[in-house]
Length: 181
Length: 349
Image 1 (cartoon, each protein chain N blue to C red):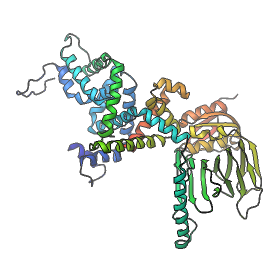
Image 2: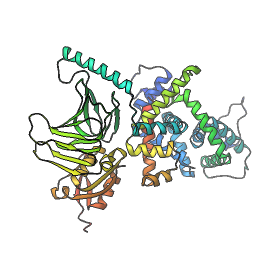
Image 3: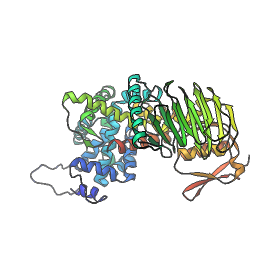
Image 4: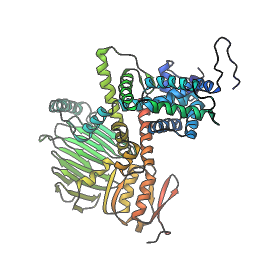
């Protein structure tokens, strides 16, 4: 709480805002996973800042980090879902198509090569998913590719939600290991 | 810089000084548990809101070390890539599974090239397995679909080794060990021959399943017809199998058994679903040992012979054993690197 402040920049006097600034990168990641888009995540992180700065100061929490994440969750929910999601999908695709893949930065292609690159990327995605063990592949496909919830996937496959979660996260791990290379 | 140092220290000095290099290395040499956690957190966050305690744990994990954040970002990027291309990937996966496309022209070109290369091989390297022989190997628990130059596809089950050699007189596959489903493109001039132990399976255009595990052979036909005959110098009868027929044979034995079988059931392993009808428990365990790396043994011969009927979904080994225990009173105990199955004396029925 008693962090040394630089006199040149106006330091936030609010401890919650201090924590927010410290954790901003984490919160952007949180929003990116929740919203499905890094671009929207930046907006949401900004919105969260505004919300924290203008909040009712009388509300306190035993754990300020938990409180920030709780408010972050509300910020998420406040966003109209349907439209935001559709935009997120498009934005995310355009972005990954020539910006980043498994953390590896890819140079921006000229438009003529872009089609080839995205076809190649698609092929890589298909091949990597196709090589997953069958159950893992099916769970990943039903959930991630066809948009079913974990519970729906579990029902279709006749498995517990927990096994479905395990399959999906094992699939994501395997795909990341392969595509991030 | 501190991050880079930390990552490189796993592997000593690196030859890739670029920023991309460090990303790649972080993955290749990164901690396996870290990747587990990164994927699990992405999946957890995507599934729904976090509770207070989970949120705090998530934040602490991300902050613990910069490598955690890098791992998280990598998994998230891959997840986003699939979410964005979900429909397309899904469609392409279906094509790949259900309808292997046969490009006639390419098949002919492939044949010409192969034949020429084969002829050359005879002159230059007069050995049995020439340079045209492709080997395909799967680890336990791994499935793989191979598309051959002629448009045929082979689905390999886990723990399978086979070689493919296209020659002028025929398409030769040698199944050394394991199980595979062959979907063979029609080519009357070049028969498709699968050598499996002391038998040869000959086919013109069909779908069938062949397996060879520990000297036991079995062939099941889904479409078309195949011929199973002893290899040269081995005595025994030749059989022509039609759809819905299954041939079982023990290597070295003269006798061969042909029975009715439901091809969809026999080929079910490709979708992780195994169907058993009055088959000994030892067969089920053979299948499990193909699907999972932890190997299971049964010492009690009477238990091994217990007939099993039912459908087993091959998701994870512990769950499969639990479901199997509903069919037959068994219990699994750790034994060395593997598991030993014993009769569960506690649950007498």
